[in-house]
Amino acid sequence: MNIQSIVHPTDFSDLSRRAMAHALRVALATKSQLHILHVREPGQQESGESMHIRRLLDQWGLIDEHQSPREISAKLGVLVSNVSVEDIAPARGILRFLDQHATDLVVLATHGREGLERLWAGSIAETVFHRSAIPTLFVPPHARGFVGQVGGEIRLRRVLVPIDHAPTPARAVEEVRQFAKVVGGTDTGMYLLHLGTSAPVLFNTARAVEFEEPVILRSGNPVPSILEAADEFDVDLVGMPTAGHNGVLDALRGTTTERVLRRAPCPVLAVPA
Image (cartoon, rainbow, N blue to C red; front, side, top):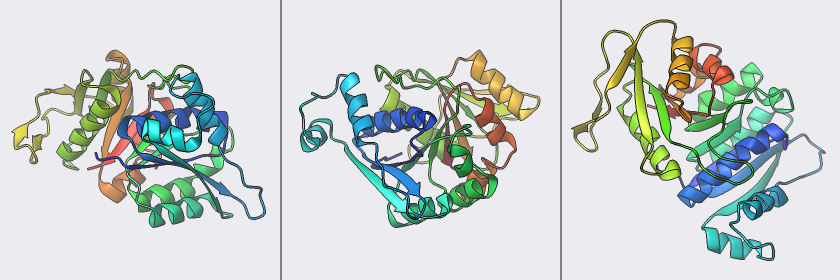
């Protein structure tokens, strides 16, 4: 996963700011450009999160309060831009931006009781992520994030990846592994989970070697089984391989992945396989 550009759609709520801390930390780890995207209704006053980003960097001990934006960008290797687009439909505004700008990762808060509810109204979520199929990091409410808001510390020690025979999961598993390695460090462990009696064959064609991790076989209802495994292994991230466009749509349609998102104890990274 080569991350050079990250987009974080926001409504400036506290829920969004938890996700923003994750977007900023990933941008710092990957030396990426971070776009803070706000879709405002026609006539609504423009706003931005520059000061909040600066406060985070300051309290994380990464910058000096007197440094200019240019000095901060040069020091940290990250360019943060506030983008405000005008549209009465949030999904359309987000899609237009994603269509016009190369994006490697989207970072989103999910299912809040504040303004983000309108972003996640069924057709909006389906429209945005069915058409974009971009790897997306979801930060659910009440979940334990892997980035500390106050100190900016990263806690990404263990990752759970549920896999199936289709879509072929090897590429997505490798991308989740690389994401965890870049963001969390080399000591991050990975658990591969399959619900069934016969594990999918995992083969990394890029490296021409099989994956080292054994596949854990479980049975039962997918949602409780995934959530139980996440709690059992005390994971800090769940990686969900998806089938490209259809898979991203399925990830939000009210079946397995959406229900995992609602109850996940940690962030969820959906990666097209």
